[in-house]
Amino acid sequence: MALHVERAGAGPDLVLLHGWGLHGGVWHGLATELAPAFRLHLVDLPGHGHSRALPFGSLDAVADAVAAVVPAGAALCGWSLGGLVAMRLATRHAGRLRAIALVSTTPCFARRDDWPHAMARETLEDFAAGLRDDPARTIRTFVNLNALGGPHARDRMRELAALLVERGTPSAESLAAGLAVLHDEDLRDEAAAIDLPAAVIHGARDALVPAGAGRWLAAALPFARCTEIGEAAHLPFVSHCADVAQALRHLAGGESGRKLAHG
Image (cartoon, rainbow, N blue to C red; front, side, top):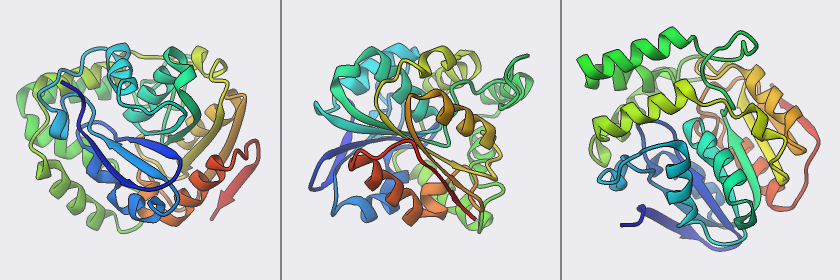
């Protein structure tokens, strides 16, 4: 059984990967902006949305499942957990991609002694415990952090709450597996091996993934263009849709290596 993919638009292929607990519908606003320029592929990751019957599994397994629905020569854009999937896919299936975009992404979600740009490991462990004890509340709390710090945060939280149930609740097993990926994986050593044109897009007010992680990625990736949006949090493609769309159009044109800042 293949992953569910929603397709729209015309042009070069651009595949969009969502974050933990949500589904491809989170991209609909950005998709409206990009459809005139790209053939868009909005993927529901395993265990999420219309792919919720499939197990999430390991990061390698998820990357392989996504690779099976990525057209040859596509650009790949991942947000948050989807960015980790995109990075792993780029190292395991490099020949399939022409470019990569990482939105609100960190190579290492959990804090380590040599990695301050991250969430405390204990916080992630508390989320994992909460997922067992009160899954609905835990999912809402985690997803609400996506909007925290950004403009119109309460409106964004309401929109995310509606999205959460739009395609059914993700399976508990897949949610737990996704949290385990966030807790355990460290892709810092892989970043330098991603020999592709890259766009790193980050909100300066991100409450889930500190902006320092995006700056680190932009420096580590060999051919990266960095867009840091001063007023955005973890959902820059929602709060600053036009800026993110512009960055992705630049990526499609093959531009890289310049630092942009938006106040």
